[in-house]
Length: 192
Image 1: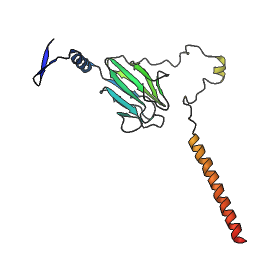
Image 2 (image 1 turned 180 degrees about the vertical axis):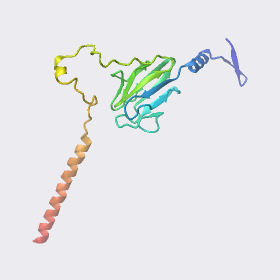
Image 3 (image 1 turned 90 degrees about the horizontal axis):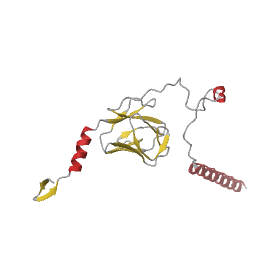
């Protein structure tokens, strides 16, 4: 094993580290490309080992959209793999429509953060096939769906209950009533 000298001491040469550096330098440039209207064309090249994605400015890739959490997820370069890891986001992280806490991304896959859709691209990979919207879905189409004009379209995000706001409103109304009652009682005593 070859060694390198460091301050008079002999240290073994780190072949694994060198191989990692060489492989990283030959890694094709991976990037995230936003597909959602209003953000189309926004992209982020994945240059660092860790890329944070979220709504606030301190993220590597900021997406200022309310359904994206302040620190929604991170993209990690682990050897030849590109991994997405959810950071306990409110609306979740989805890969090709499937919820995930951590997953290896493949070129062409669609990442959804809140209402934002992002395609993972890799320079060496072939561009993703365009979907033929005229082709029937794999399970077929039911007659009732045709009569109703297609599948129901709704938000895939469940609205969180906002108990704190409700409690605040009820307490405010209660205090308002107590104040009004106090004023009425005070005025009746003054007029007597």
